[in-house]
Image (cartoon, rainbow, N blue to C red; front, side, top):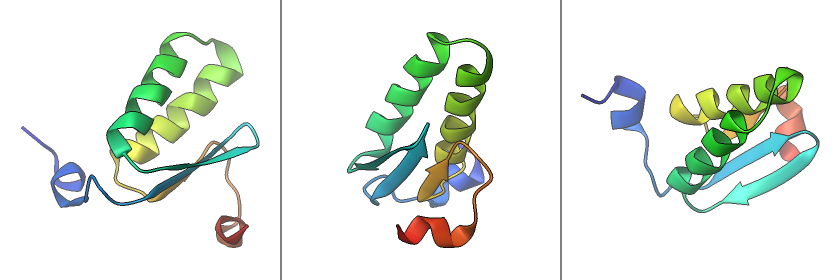
Length: 77
């Protein structure tokens, strides 16, 4: 069964990720989830933690997902 955030989020909504300094705009949440899941499975240590943080934010329905605790105004870059 789907959890509340997954049911409430629009899968077509634009998604922005920023991981390891690279900002990327996704048209598909599923594509982004697949990318970060594969990256998590193929990495270790700090790199794994960064990919995991972004993946979990995507899972929770956020539209701007990042690997570090940045200021909210960072999104406007």
